[in-house]
Length: 344
Ligand SMILES: Nc1ncnc2c1ncn2[C@@H]1O[C@H](COP(=O)(O)OP(=O)(O)OP(=O)(O)O)[C@@H](O)[C@H]1O
Ligand SMILES: [Mg+2]
Image 1 (tube, rainbow, N blue to C red):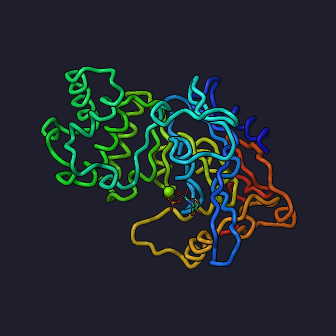
Image 2 (cartoon, protein in one colour; image 1 turned 180 degrees about the horizontal axis):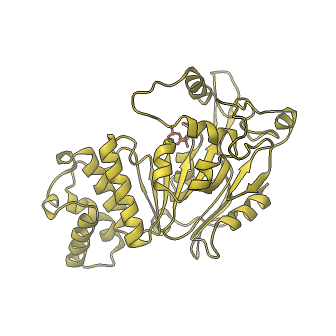
Image 3 (spheres, protein in one colour; image 1 turned 90 degrees about the vertical axis):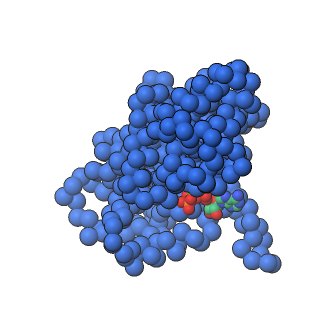
């Protein structure tokens, strides 16, 4: 399976991708009851992803599918069980090699909760200057100039410098988090549900800020969300994740216009619309995701919920296949428009 994924990763990346993650696997071990044995929860199962400079990749999937775990493994908050990660010429981790410390990886992250990730006792200048001070490469005056420049880049004025996090709105705090993330010049920014907690108009401002930073700085971004509508707006490419696996990946337009995997189609159909209640089926789906995940068995990860599942889906894991700009892991992919839709 890995070999096929590598080939596919190569097809979608340019000649020299910035980021290459290959076969990243991570399990958590825990008990489901007092006298139960420890069970494996495979949060990431053979995940391979590539990314070019200046490209925005949307990682989408429902709660518990492993999106944040992937981000944490990349920035070094969690350790992968296997797999390799390269960023440019830097080897971040590989089996049997010492992993690069988080501060040297050139990857920064923005989290969902901007208030929780900003120290309430530090003012804006100290928050933004901290990363540069730790590096020790710049003099105090140069650091102050960088702080001002980055405040401006994210759309905040110099009057913010002496303020504290509680003196900002949620959207402004998220701008601060973005400024703090980019001031150390990362090559890759990971935004994990970075706009999800904000109301719709502020959410759009943050998405547009990320687009602007990509254009100005050539920043590569992995944007994590469970919201397909947001992913579609922002991203050049999409990777759809289900139970720790990438089940479909490709150009954003190709994936959204012609989803091949039944799960991708379901995510697209479930794009949130204001005022629409979740259907009974979506409620059931949300509940079934809360069950502990079984380690990658020789079957399709989506088999229990798939309206197209046949015998082979229960006995073999589908290999990645390519068609018209997307790659997907499904024995019974959706055909082009006009195909009878199972979820109608
Ligand atoms: N530190 C941990 N210890 C044990 N299990 C964990 C840990 N972190 C994550 N998990 C488990 O790994 C799986 C993937 O979790 P993860 O947080 O990556 O999902 P997610 O896709 O980010 O979900 P959400 O959209 O709700 O943020 C879940 O089953 C979760 O319970
Ligand atoms: Mg998460």
